[in-house]
Length: 161
Image (cartoon, rainbow, N blue to C red; front, side):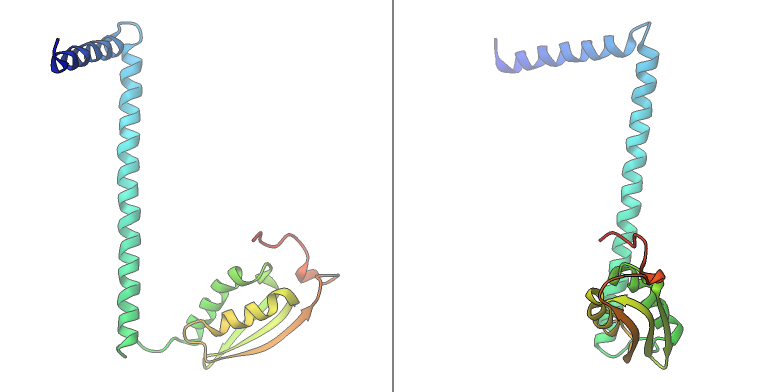
């Protein structure tokens, strides 16, 4: 027997087995419903993945366009103090374990940091804030501690990192 004939026979047997499985009078309806649900779920997952990737790509393109504009001097107006303050607050969570212990104020692009911080995070915070777009300077008024000790603002779990 030729291999092509053998493949045809195997395919026919497999198709027959699937048909018996799906058309079974007792369990066929349930199996078809499960198959339909799984296919619908897979279709939804593919659509969701496509939407997420499209949104991500659009964000990257917008970022690249903004960087290109900035590089050739066509950037928008300079950041306002409110925008800079929001940028700093957003970055704090990545720079320190207890961002709530730090107060941020901005005046004319100069960031003022008040509050409490442990020494191991201090330098990283000041350098990190200084590199944020729009920041013209950092006024470090933080109280630095070697250990959290009895300082209420430095107690608790903080974020894991």
